[in-house]
Image (cartoon, rainbow, N blue to C red):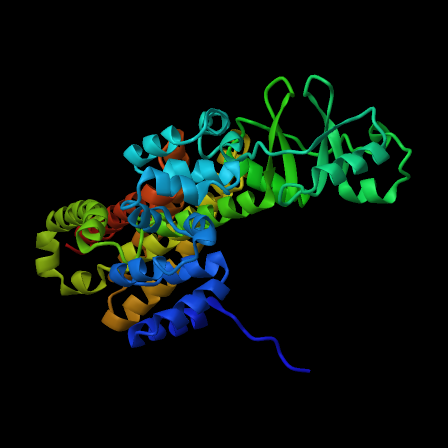
Length: 451
């Protein structure tokens, strides 16, 4: 049996880039037309800016909107910045409403206003209804395009209605059942519609126990709900239970992916939408801020060290071993910090369990501190033949690991209370604390014991 061709994005990247470099633009365009919009977006983001513009001009007009939706905000902004509102209107007219809302919010303000101005009144009103909710809420994710049925009709009536309608929105696995005032009653899974007798009433076969999403729920809560209940779609209602729209699994996958990327990028003070090929000045400006913050924390650690210059001048051994204590504290604190931030993202940390978590992590820090204090103290004694230096560095490690555990729990909790992303600022604060506490403990004890 012959194997299916492997059309992985990275192979397309090599083919298209090489073909463009050779000047065979027609061949490159043919390859682009055979690629999925997500693959085209990956290809565009993997190119320098000048080649990105060239490839974009080869993209088929019918898939331009889908390609733009797959791009990060910064890469997308670079491509649409030269377009006028009329061109954008043509590109986006086939987008689903929830995708269109995401697209509009990512545009520069001037283009945003112009694009809204070119829409007809009904489309603009529907779009503004979605845009009225925060982007990271259920209302910001929902699609207003739903298929609703009444509970008092037969399945045969529903089937005839669907045939007359001709098509259904993407990712429709169930119809939403409402009363005559539009209030949510339940859902009619398509498998029940197809497997029950046509004369049965919708109300007798519908499900009334499906999870329902309130419009103001956060995107993270929606993602957890989809994950816990293995949902493909779910209805969105207001505080009175009136149906507003629905959320589908493709939007939830985007939320999960963005949260994962944000967690990784935030550790370095970056954003998941940052473009790897963005202009030098823009990249420099974004990264310079957190480098400056890190420099200030480094100066603070250096100042602490300078307060013990006499100790360092007299005892060379202290200078040799000085970096071990902050390093151990930094690693231990990062472990705790990562676990706590992940637990926050999953909604596992509440007021009722914070104290238990804090005590547990401090105990872990003390036990690990005791273990490695003994190991490092023994190595220091074997290396330098001085039991006092072994005691000093052992106690310093024990102190710093306990402080690291305390900080790893309290920093993300405190930052979240002030609506600051713990993944963005937690690492810098933790590094400062473990460096300062580690140096103070080691150099302070060395001054007291060895001098």
